[in-house]
Amino acid sequence: MTKILGLDPGLRHTGWGVIRVQGNSLTPIAQGTVDTDAKLSLAERLNTLYQGLIEVLKIHQPDEAAVEETFMNTNAVSTLKLGMARGVVLLAPASQNVPVFEYSANKIKKSVVGVGHADKHQVLMMVQRLLPTLQATLKPDAADALATAICHAHYRRGSINT
Image 1 (cartoon, rainbow, N blue to C red):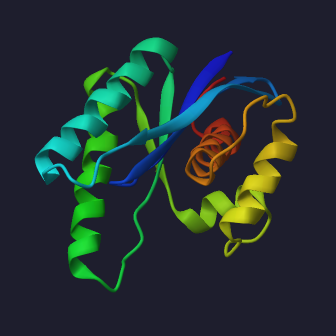
Image 2 (cartoon, helix red, strand yellow):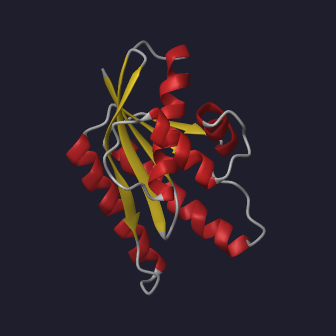
């Protein structure tokens, strides 16, 4: 049995989701978002993000983490800020000695929906179908994080013994 933490980086909302993998069975454990206040300084927002993720890591103690890679945005400032948030998202599990794996958005969408250019609604619907025991209302950022965890569960079989 392996617990995987999926992470969908964002400065405003970073989605997270934890699943248990046992053989071919995927079971949702928990999901949510770490939200930051846009009125705070960038440093304060990054700290809020880091502290929130450390809390998730301490509570759920995942064996592995999977992070969605950042896409390039036309707005350079937005891309830079997202890159900083992504750095925090990579740092948090690594600082707790949790191995971190990265996947492109297209690979995640293709592994969950079947097509690499699926929209957020399609991802959310498929996550709910793949994890039918999911009890909570699912926010799009948390659904993306769970999709990242599901993607890792599929691809990890080739690189890690389960």
